[in-house]
Image (cartoon, rainbow, N blue to C red; front, side, top):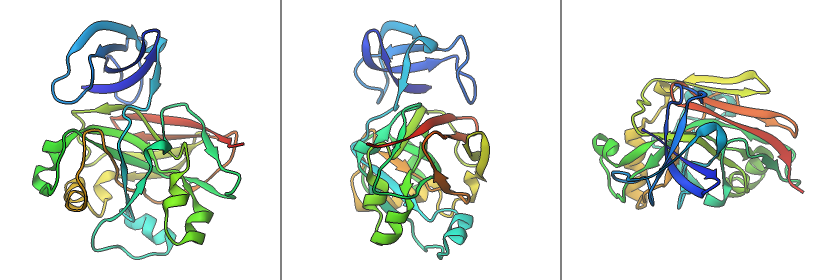
Length: 262
């Protein structure tokens, strides 16, 4: 099932998206309204819209966004670091979340804002101390993410909260796929149609099971929490007027224009 959030003539709602192609929307795609929330077994209101007639929002508003750093060897090499023995975690505020086609706004205090295409995990139930082998049991599904980063501020601060935490710095979407197999798919980031990142999820140093186990030892995960699983080689700056698109093979494409924050 593909789960999303939409803005429609009836307001904002969770929906089940049917008829969308492997990586995008088809003319016959339909959004069927879910009553209340998408966790557990969703129930439907009976209302539906053509997907082309509504606006896709970020598919979830997480209580927290937990991110994994240094999870692809080629990215560690380009940044001049060393591979960590255990997952490196940090948090982005939920106020950084935006949906598809919403502008990423570069703050005036930063001279370099980078894209970082990533696969994201969405948690489906409260959990703590989850074993890696059981991680699938607590995952609702997967979506596409862009871990936008003020690179100059990351280097100046020596820690990542400010650089990763600006409003609009966590695009998510276009939907959550509950049946997706993330074990070995291509991850690709394009800037104005030019491929800048291309890798495969099978090259993660710490796989999704290990990530969920590690994080859940530290903090309780709640339904809707989002985990960003790391970015591969090829990060780089974006400027106003450009468009960045992140594609996870078989899952979808998340595309956002870049603007300036006043």
